Length: 444
Ligand code: FCB
Image 1 (cartoon, rainbow, N blue to C red):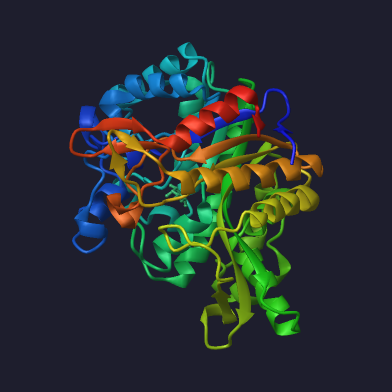
Image 2 (cartoon, protein in one colour):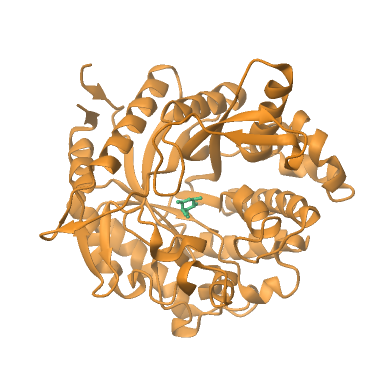
């Protein structure tokens, strides 16, 4: 195999999220978020871990930008904590919270790193949860007002925007499985949250266009490659439903075509909020790119006793520390599926990476499994580009180890190691390798 060159200007980046790295969640007048509240509720996270300190990025952001510059990354995807800017979610603005992101953006631009801002990565202001959160239809306006304010304050310098991160996870893991904030177990709530997320997304895109600041806006979706376990009709149908339910079609069908995917409705119709059809015209609105998150894949078998008749089974491949099978070909399939079904103007891989057990030896971390993981996935991204996918960039999850939600600090996804006792950053071997890929804009 020869050298795999990537297109000129390809945006090699790293990604993080506010609650996972910042720490100091209540500093400088910020209000609590639902993740602050959830992680402080006993029994919700591994070892009772919280984001109180995390990577202390709130205080160390300058060093972290220097680190990214040292690695040569071209772009940085991070998220904004809504309740730093609007402590109660709406109304009064907290200038000191805004100031943090202003400084971060300036620091990045000085380092020649393109900021990609995620406006919402799961840390809803707790005050809005108290009035129903994502399950209240008014969230679409609350969110759009918040987004619009951020466009006004940062849009002169920031040109790449992501409305929501993984709305499926937020809706289902947060509202149906109860494993993420706000910890609900209600299938009706989960589907109404999906619908309100789409309405909120659409209103924010409209506000962005109206501000006329230039730049691009898209949405980031979670994906898990799902293929039928056999050629039996029942397995094929189960896999189609599963794909439409957990992957990009759930959101891209409404956004690009103005309707929920057909097979999904066979399981979801009863759960959808009454009159949802009336919102579909508004939800259908052009976006500039699609953000794809991808980690793993499984096979699907029809199983009448399983939820929605869907059972996932493994292929017996190597697993990461998360227990997720390593299946790089699935990344290709997802990218190709998005390109062929919706023909977006651009696609970014907004997250891909892996948790493996890391050991510090003489101040170094030899994480060859993570490097192999990334290499195999980069190769599939390259193949997708060769086959016509308009892939514009690739963000590795994550710049550094961080608070992995309900798993707390027990899973390390970083290409930079964090010693949580000292907050020392150690550049892992995978980061050194990535740095060379970026410099060559090619995979050897
Ligand atoms: C994604 C999340 C991200 C991180 C990775 C491992 O679902 O968007 O915050 O937790 O998984």
